[in-house]
Structure formats: C-alpha cells, structure tokens
Image (cartoon, rainbow, N blue to C red; front, top):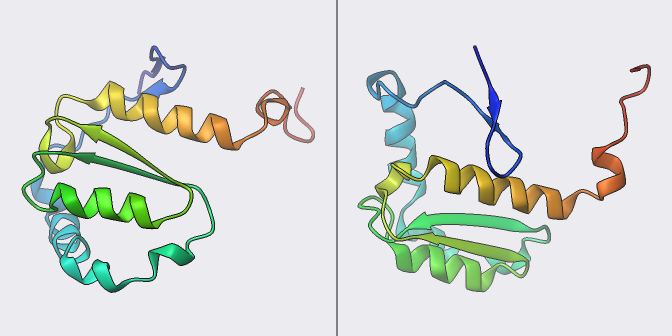
Length: 120
C-alpha cells in the first residue's frame, strides 16, 4: 500500500471504508452507541482531552448531542462539519487534519522527534 503525506503532515492511506457491507456490524453498533441514553452518562467526569467530530447532517446521531457532549466534557473540542453524514463523506482530509492537530497539541514536540530506543 502506498501512503503519502497530506497537507497537515499526517499519512493518507489508500484504504477505504467501502464496501460498507463487511462493516455492517460496526454500523449497527454505532446505532446503539449513538443514542440518547448517553445523555445520562457522567461526561463531566472525563478527565482527559477529548476530540468530538460531528457533521450537522448526520442522520444517525443528532448534532445537538455532540454539542451537548462537548459542553459537558471539561477538556472537549468540538469540530463541526457542515455535511458528510455519519461517515464524514467528502471530508477525509479535514478529519485527518483535525485529528493530527489534536494529537500534536497533546504530545510535547520534543517527544515527536525522539527516536525509539535502539533506533538509529
């Protein structure tokens, strides 16, 4: 598989989510986990940074739930996509860029340039 750097410095993979059929169980799982029952979860107790990426037109999980979760999680960052549905279709680069930015802010720069023990 060939990989290349995207505009945010992350890797772009040639792999795809499609065809969706083999991922059907994951889609069903998403349906169960993205339901209003999460409203009762103690999100205020999450003590680590959290990145929430959500599209406003997601037909499976309402946008207001993501907005509310981001409000309740102390160190949450909400990234809103105007479209793309549940799979963020058409926003691959945007999503990768935001995840990359989020992770880079969490890891001190000196650690990102340090070779693994025994590496040259």
